[in-house]
Length: 371
Image 1 (cartoon, rainbow, N blue to C red):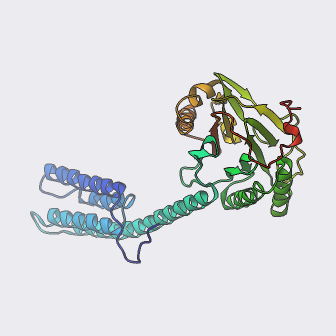
Image 2: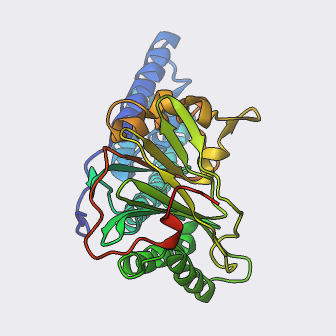
Image 3: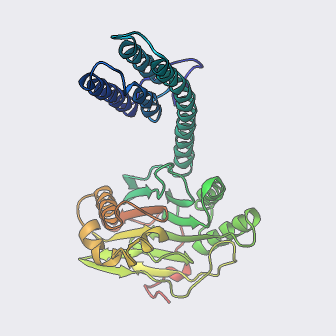
């Protein structure tokens, strides 16, 4: 991030240039009207509007430039042809006063805009620190992740994801922290930090859930929680545990299969007792993990048809292309207005890989019975 030294002039933004141009067009129009009206000045007071116009887009330097030009035009019309009278003097004074007020307003607005830009940059840095880029491959899997912010002001929230190549296979997590803002980012960062450690240490996904649950319980209040789904791919066997999170979608040969858990479990922070769902993967299978911002996206009360469109949007091209197509279709559906942030992870299974040597297979992975 580039730091700007005190007193250093920031280059004029496109909005500021547009505002400056509009102000000069306004000055030209008022001057043309005054010329067409005859010798006596009647409209020079309208020149005071130009500094206020440019103040909505630019900083004080541009306001002073426009105000000085407006004052010069007012003096020109006021002095000719009969010299400056009381009415013209009053109007020119109004232009100068308007310029001073607009310069102050432009300075305040520019400082607020600069502060907002700084907050946006810090939010993006914080979000990037929490959500590291995924893929294009994690172990034997093609993996892509995407974060869609509901706020145009800042890409910051409590959705989280991670994919790791561990001694126990590729392990992924996707989660959603209750709440928003920096507190949600703090909790998401804590969950991911814990997961990045225990995913390499625990052979059993249920043990990882227990570790994360204790970490969340120590860090939140009674009404705070984190929904999460944990996925493990090992030698073509997919194991999923779900803590109050939307079920992942399995895309297979044109079909979309919701991988609902064998039994429901509460979110992290409420001592979930999970039962794994186990599936045998086929080459070409894709798995979509998502947060409830996708499940709840709607327009005019109608939810986005994720399951109906998933194969057409996600089943072709690279996994990154698939997520880009899903995001475009989603934003078109909601007309660009989301109520909640969305985290997406899409993985593709190419074929069986040998299980890591010396790693025992958990008892639930014997066979493919999900119960």
